[in-house]
Length: 440
Image (cartoon, rainbow, N blue to C red; front, side):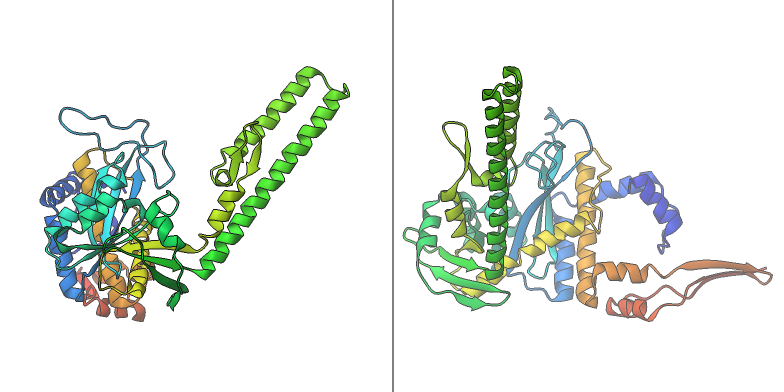
């Protein structure tokens, strides 16, 4: 909601103990207070450690990923003498490169509990931010932590920085960039070891990698999906190339026999070229296509063969000498918890739209959403229920006012058994059955 709508909701639609009416200015002042208090992450640090103590969390694996959220405005913000532009164009993970955005980073535990959130200008590249994240988390003195990151953060400089002060990493490696170490790792022979969750792993030795270990992971079910999707794409390309070739041959034959004018033949050829260009530039099909010197398109069979060898596989690198290959692979799969956090922020908790233009209030908005995500994860962990179920069940508790000859009484509706169980699991005292009685 906008802050005006939020203030109206808090005043008219919800009963919050100790809070009377709230106006928009109070909401803004609360946001400003929160943003100022968390300038160096102190609010997040205090809240997280309170939750870690409450849930007895062990922060031995720290999962980090980024997303972006866009703003419905026509132009980005330029840098000024007073401050840098915050809402900027960049590589959108929401596929909205046409709109300004900000970049949001999220660190979570292996249980999915949010640890800390960051915000950067929308033009920020993933490779530029990991050192800042590492330094910020080092100040929290979490002890021995293995940082788990995706392929977007696995540059040599980033991985070296994660090892500072005794830290370690588990990182997904880019498999299609022509990296010599990656190619060497994938060419190594060895027997896979089956682990949980439809996953097979094997550790391989790579010359020149120092003490960094490489682990090849293979998901047979994903391999079948990759093969099926590729075969569908190839069949689609072949059908389109055959259609263009057949139509071109028919048009040329008609032009040769004088059935159409030269101008009409030129227009027909232009249409064929446009169709080829559309196929060549197709967002998902173009990876399988190669353009010959004469301009004609063919399927890149070498690329198809190379990709077939990668079906269902991904490559991990870790600097930890003690973690097992199974734990490293399963730990990396838990990176999905960060992605789940982003999905919940954008869907269940309505991170977007952002009704702010000032940087400190945008940061406060993201921080409020992070606090909400943390609360939902604590509630889910304590009750064993999804947040959607918890919200739906507790929203059935209503406060009603009844007026009659004897007076006016304000009370809540009877507490349902499922709602009562949620309150008990979260150690929250339900609202009193009777809140006010005025005798006439």
